[in-house]
Length: 325
Image 1 (cartoon, helix red, strand yellow):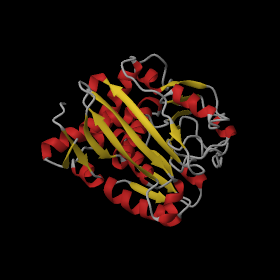
Image 2 (cartoon, helix red, strand yellow; image 1 turned 45 degrees about the vertical axis):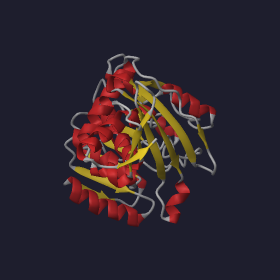
Image 3 (cartoon, helix red, strand yellow; image 1 turned 120 degrees about the vertical axis):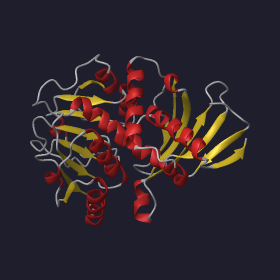
């Protein structure tokens, strides 16, 4: 990576046109977690501002020497946008030359955010879910629900998916699209409980809320199941979380930072970070009856692990617009 006095601008359409696959994203994110577990990365807890209730705009810098990747994502999440026909997540990612610090690319971050979040769930599930997991429950059938399911289908032999969304039309569209694109049986269910009980893997992907609506109750998550919390603890009652045998996260300092902001008031003791489990510093799943969970907050390292894949492919394909610095 070398600065030429220009930067490459990649729109959302450009990022998608590079054709980076979910398998590639999963592999890069897993490599990143190994580097994190070895202490060979740099990432501060993300600072942010919150202009509206339950909204956020975060600055997310990170450096991964092994991937020759350094940069920052400036990302917003506004639940109110959905009623306006606008996407919940928006933002840009700046990729820098590690040798000079000069920006080499600015790219839309919507696809990257969705793909890397799904990939992080798949990596967590690889170490914390049962290898024979076949049924998945998705609560929240938006962009994240779809990307998480796509990633899980790369790692597991998924046979059936139970999809719930508070908006039945959104759930119906999700069911039709994922059934066709992923070649898996997707069943739209009418209640959240039906997307949890009996499932091997459960993903909650609704809006992130400071005060959880605590929909998921005790006894819903089966012994031996794995849950991925994409929306912090928004969907979970404290009593249901109390049944978890191993509560893990992608970054403990960041989770503790969020606690100071009023999130995660009623979660159990944290077993460890995902990077520790991947590198063997802590045990992952140890038997077939443990209830395991990973609360992936969405860390800058995820994005900076994926951005170089997009940038490299864009250069190879001649995708994007060159702009003078």
